[in-house]
Structure formats: structure tokens, C-alpha cells
Amino acid sequence: MGSSRFRSSSNRSTPFESDHQQFGFLIPSISRKYRSLSFDSGLRLIVSLSGNQRFESPTRLVMATSALNSDRKIVTGPAGYVLEDVPHFSDYFPNAPTYPNPLQDNAAYSVVKQYFVDDDDTVPQKIVVHPDSPRGTHFRRAGPRQRVYFESDDVLACIVTCGGLCPGLNTVIREIVCGLSYMYGVKRILGIDGGYRGFYARNTIHLDLKTVNDIHRSGGTILGTSRGGHDTTKIVDSIQDRGINQVYIIGGDGSQKGAAAIFEEIRRRGLKVAVAGIPKTIDNDIPIIDRSFGFDTAVEEAQRAINAAHVEATSFENGIGLVKLMGRYSGFIAMYATLASRDVDCCLIPESPFFLEGQGGLFEFIDKRLKENGHMVIVIAEGAGQDLLAESEEQSTTLKDASGNKLLQDIGLWISQRIKDHFAKKMTLNLKYIDPTYMIRAVPSNASDNVCCTLLAQSAVHGVMAGYNGFTVGLVNGRHTYIPFYRITERQNQVVITDRMWARLLSSTNQPSFMKHEPNHPVGEAGAMKW
Image (cartoon, rainbow, N blue to C red):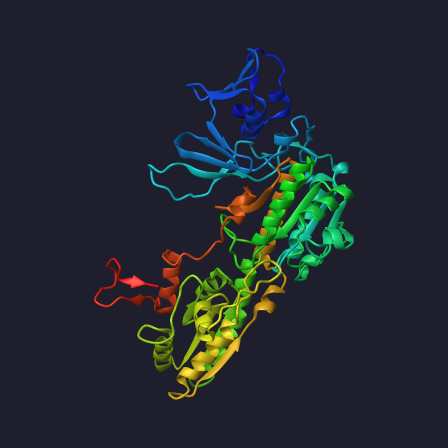
């Protein structure tokens, strides 16, 4: 394995050679079990044990140093290289047996020039750099490895879907089952009914190739889902009692936090159980990854609502079509649907505050656009304008749903009424309000998302079989990677309104930015704008 293998300077067999195949996996075990860790001038790793026994790597290492704590597995190297690695069975079970990957005998892979991903392959988080930029953060590349940590007959896998509905859930379920069955010969796969609480409150569903054959044609999830119900102790008790050793969790940021808690409890108990997450969020608000499955379908389906709003608006004098789309904290669906449509006059998202009255406000822009065109289409994300709504109602709700998300008031209904009230004495408006939220969530995934779901599911299966653990699989710069849970749950992905994509939208709709200007300051001068 080149720089990934270690040898003893005394030429005797060592735990390194038999138990640790990759440098990234060696570091945590070394830090716990051996006396010292250092590098020589050639960037060769030197490990000293008690007595005079010493080990060193045979070649120069790309990964030069390691900074670790109990939760994070980080390896640093020359030129600012950082690998944010994921846990592996060899970290906790140094003597765990490994087996040849059955893919080497799989007919589907017989035409592939290189069956397996190299152990040193990583994917950079950022690909646009300057000549003097550090190499930056990397994640471990997803894909099959030469050795696996499970024999097919010993695997008892389970799949659970959590949180709200999203196009593609059934496709992910299907492809996990197909991947385990076709690629690795796994025959025992369970579906957990009804989300996290299904682990301890409901019966399981047996999944096989026949069961999942055509489920991708339907929206929703055949396993059922729910919000909340996460009781880590009960869930892990159920996993342990049933003898489950692979857990695939499909869900958004809240569900991935639950997956991280399950992984930590499993590790605390010393169970040889792998936990993998497949990120699901129709809002595309999970960080790090390029996009989440279901997002393309949501944007495509949103076009139907926008088209209907446009037809309504153009068919009546002073017609306004108002469409509310999903986007609690992130306005990606609204932004991309607007860019794709070309019929939208104004897009309002949570990241870009706006105001209604006065110069530069929304009402002024509506009046201007109606005088110019005689009609208007407005797209608003569900999380936009919540501050205005709270001020108007003189109250702000603190209620949350079972997943811990703040319950939002209906901005679509509220702003529709405010627009009608404002223009009531000026002109006769014909405003049609369309909320396609549940129609979009319930449709099956389109072709693009079906491909995305397939690759995510297969990557998750490859990672688990190879012994990786406590990770979420995701597309980073066009490559599938294994990402630590903490990176997925540390923040939410949001539209950056100082970025070019938002500027492209403003150029497309020709809407104002709705920034308030301080008096006596020209636009562009420091301090000239405030939100």
C-alpha cells in the first residue's frame, strides 16, 4: 500500500502490519497504545514502544502530523494539508479480522480497470485556490476497498428513514438493499418502521430484492417516518438485542445528530456495529456537500407552481401570482426555481431581509412592476420575512416541532393579505396564492436525483463494509466522500447573498436588493448599507 504500510526496523511481525492498513487509522491507536510518535527529517513516521523496539514507515508520508481528540480524527501534512477523517473499526478493534472484498469476483466489476479506491485518496473541500494557498481541508474518498470487515453471512443490516418526506427516499432504500445484495451477497436486511421510535416501539420489515423492486416509482417512504422519538439508549438496546451490525440512517441534520449519538453510544459499549448516514434535506441546507438528494426534483416540481402562478397573473388585470416554497432557514429552492423559471419578478428568501413600505421597499417595487407589465410573479421561501410577521403580530412563537425546529407562521398568507390591504385603495388586484409544499415533498425523484440516490447508497454500503464508521456520505466537488458527523451537524448551509449566485438572481429578476440606505452616504461607501 506504499506509504500507508508500516514495517518494523527489527523485521519482526508487528501489530501495525496485521491490524492497521492506513496511516489515518493508525494515529488514534498509536496515541493510545504506544509510547511516543514523531517524524524524522524525511517525514517518516517513527513510533517507539516500551523498551528499545522502534518502528518506522518505509517511505515518505504525505500525511505528516496528527491532532486528535476523542471526537475528531484530524491528520495534517505539508503545505497546509488537513484530512478530517472518519472513525474506522481498526481504531477500536485492532485485532478484527478482515476478508477479501467479494467485488473482485463480481461480474459487474470485471470491466473496471481499478476495482478499489486507493487508501490514500482524499477529496479537497475547496477546489478554487490561489498559487500560494494552503492545500486545505480534505475528506476521505468514498468507494470499495480491497479488504472488508464483514463476512456476507454475518451481516444483519437495518435501514431507517427519519424526519420529513423528500423525493428519493424510496430510491435510497432500494439501492442500499440492492448494493448489499448484489455487490456483497448480504441476505439479511431489516427496515425500521416509523423513524427512530420504530427501533423500540414497532416491528421491523424484512427487505429483499423483491420487496424493493419498484418502490422508486413511488413518493414517500415504504418504511414510514416520523419526527422526534430519538431515545439513544433504547435504540442501541434494540440494535444490540436484535444482533444488528450495520445501521443506515437516512435523514436531515437533526437525524444526523441522532446518528452521531447512536454511534457514540455504540462505541462506548464496545459493539462492532457500523453507523452510516445518508443526508436527506429537500432544502439543501446540509453543509459541506454539493447538494442533497431530492433537491433537483423539488426545483423541477416548483416550476409547475410558478408556471401556474404566471398563467393566473397574466390572465387578469393587475394579476399577482404568489408562490410559497420550502426553505425554513435556507432559500436554495426558491433561488434555483426562480433562476430556472425566468417568469419570476421577485424572489424573497430568509438570508436576504426585506421591508415592505417606503422607498426601495417591496410595495414600491410591486407598484412599479404592475405599471410596467400589468402582472407580477413573486416567489417567497417559507422562512423569509418571519421578523416582519412577528413585529406585525406583536408576538413571536417559540413553539417547536418534534424535531426541534421552530414552528414558522405562514408568511405566504400574511404577505398576501398585506399586499391586498396596501393596494386596496389604489387599484384592483387579482392575487392568487399557491402553496405546493406537500405536493413537492410527496413526488418520486426525477432522473437526476435517482442517479444521486444510487451513488450515495452504494458509497455508504462500500464504506460500512470496509470498516468505516460514524460518517455521512456526500458529494464534495463532484466526488463522493465520507464526512464526519460533526461537520454535517455543526451549522446549516445557507445562500450567501454576497456571492455571485445571488447577484445572478438579482440580475435575472431585476428586483432591488431591499437594502436600507443610510442618509448622506452613497451606495458602495463603507457604512452605506444596513440590513
